[in-house]
Length: 189
Image 1 (cartoon, rainbow, N blue to C red):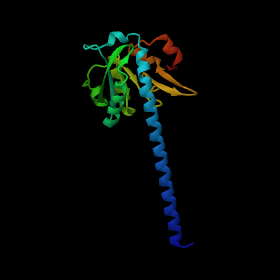
Image 2: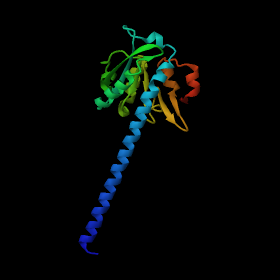
Image 3: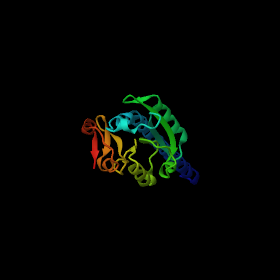
Image 4: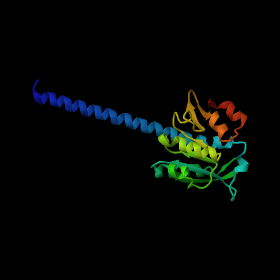
């Protein structure tokens, strides 16, 4: 085989490898998107399991919820819009706002009772958890592995979708969840 034939094979192999990597990347993004959509549907049920929910309304009588992101405001706004459509949790009206991880960490967000993480916080997880713990704010992440890292709640997929809770950090945050909810949840402690 001549030099041109070998370089043609090498180019075709590289193109095939690139196509495979793009396909894997699209598959991973699609999986994250599905987890986010499942999470935003489960989030109100987790909030509803809070014993002290009625005591957590703001001055205008709303349950104040927050969607946090790092650098995807359009995604966070879309999730906020979806969440706003539910209107009430346990007959209490809902107000949803969007902010960044940094604003939440630095106390530049309005008071909220629960936070949905639109992106995995990765290297900011401890700072977000510290802020949530000090203000008894429930954190929910749809991303696999975040509950094990300390985030209060999320979900696991087995033969069905189950809420996933970190009992240690929930207790540290002084959040009290209903016994039935805890019985049907998977626990990490």
